[in-house]
Amino acid sequence: MNSREIIIDPKIRSILKKAEDSEEISPQEGLVLLKVTGKEFFALQQTADRLCFEKKENVVTFVINRNINFTNICYQGCKFCSFSVHNKHEDGYLLTIEQVRNKTEQAKDVGCTEVCIQGGINPNLDIDYYLNILKTVKQVDSKIHTHAFSPQEVYSMSNLYQTSIEETLKELKSAGLDSMPGTAAEILVDKIRHIICPNKITSSQWIEIIKQAHILGIPTTSTIMYGHIEELKDRISHLEIIRELQRETGGFTEFVPLPFVRENPALSKLPEFPLRPSYGMADLKLFCVARLFFNNYIDNIQCSWVKLGPKFAQVSLNYGVNDFSGTLMEENISKSAGAEFGEYLKPQEIINIIKDAAKKPAQRDTLYKILKYF
Ligand code: SF4
Image (cartoon, rainbow, N blue to C red; front, side):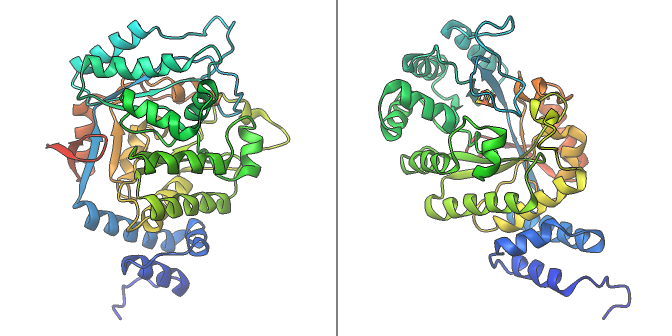
């Protein structure tokens, strides 16, 4: 043995070796890794970085996209949300279809390949409004990818439409839906959901909607919102659900860890459910564990620069992350929750950040086809 070789806990070494040998790590092993510190933490980082390097050949991608948050009126009352307001609130808004058209035209003018469309669960909408949004985007440019509507929105539409999830998804697809954000997942552990988003769909409803979308050929992202009242074992249960779904359908394009933004939401002020401490090391461990846990299942781990900030997002590129998300013109949701980072990063800024991390930048489309290397 080299006298300078760093000795780490053999149990951790053997879990990391399994991942390096492309063996699946178990939820229990994932939980062990979420708790490592010191030299074991650096060994985890090296394994995640190596696996990411081998899989993605040191390329870090991004997409040129814009958000269209068509309404902030919502009655779901999720306790982590500062974006939504009630109908009569002076800040409440609902975009007209003409406004959606204008925003899509602006997106086209700045070279967006994707519009990401989400909004509150506004009881005043009917299904035609949602369908018209999709049709309008395609009228502006049939090549723009419509990444739209969370499983919660699809659930609400199926109630409005008085039809099954399957029929609703088929209708959306024929109106122009290309893929869906896997948001509204938060943490797929019902005892936590009952506290943080009691009126939202349950874990099993989320799973069923996603599964149905995948069956119909509508790919989705997968997300986790972490760093609030959940325990580490809840994070792993969530990862396990995502991995099992991916094993079954193969319909996830990426996994996006979304740290809870603490500044404004009601959840930060509930004395009966105090937030657990959550600092940067916990974020980095989750990125690494996601890379190992999803090895051979989900190739793309994305950082959210809006929530992490561009500096920390850059750091994450050495911790198993291979995608810098999008330019995100007009990001409203994290900003409302108190995230200080802007609503738009120019492509050139993202390219500079990626190059500065000694990675190769590449523009991709929503489904991870590389469009251009820089
Ligand atoms: S997270 Fe979504 S569903 Fe929940 S309150 Fe906010 S806008 Fe409504």
